[in-house]
Length: 162
Length: 291
Image (cartoon, rainbow over all chains, first blue to last red):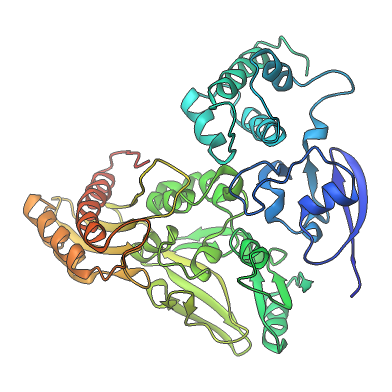
């Protein structure tokens, strides 16, 4: 069966790929575009490890077909840092030791960035509910929440140019 | 599996009707893709309806609201006027899954997935919503309570699609709410769900009410007896007692890992009472948060 020719945008760059109907966006990102920052966890939309943004909207890339990306703007973890300069969220995750094994981390960062773009000054409760779909089995979440709150504070005060 | 993304309803219905093998509609995909991956379903054709303008829009006029079947939970939440008119419907849709799931999940999909525990369905039933259906033989409407006929069973014929929902305008002193019981505060499936919509007159007497229960039978139920217990009263303690008793009496639940029959029957009454109170407060013009 003929593959679909998909033209899309990933982290601002024009991208083209060929995919089967049943391939997910996650499959395409990891296996065809070699963008392995986006992780595969449960593959059923429960864990959030594969979080990306599509036209600015946070989604699980395991629950979206690659062919559906046509004409959309996809945002992945690879789009967070600019060159060697980490995004403030990434910097704060290091400072707060908000990760251990790191499998959930790209998804948490993409989700947290989407939150702060929408709500620059969230309460702790809002952060916890927004990230409820990002499961972490290592940290117990507290350090993640503290890192996001701290990054939000710095980003509001313009301390980070990112 | 083939994928098609038609730009008209007619084309989508034709594709679905003319496929000999298993065909499925793709809206948000948050149930469909999981079912395909876990081999519950193996469709030969998936028809993505998101390129059809009318299933992606929310509009309203003096008569009421049209909500496209493929509008996402996140889009419903961001629609301030809809949230003000039917807060219970929007809140129910927003209880489904995570932020990520809300970015894709739709009420059309929630209904067509055919789960007795679908959160948005009791809220739509309570609101008096009509399901708008298009098929190879034209268009028709069904009350939302008549769309599901059993677990994973729908009153749709081959080639038919739910294109959206028609909701009445919010009554002058009207309010609605949806509550569910889960053992945690988010990211779970209803053990019992309850939607209530009611209207009161200038003296505070209930003039109309509808109530629906989810996860207590093979499909979401419209419970007319329970709602009728409120009509003609000021929704006082005695009316709420009758509502709760009728809600429990209507349950035909199963025992499963989420709850026992007895628990569901008891909780249905408790939830009905609480949900009616929220709907009443909203009818009185109070701004309340259910979740």
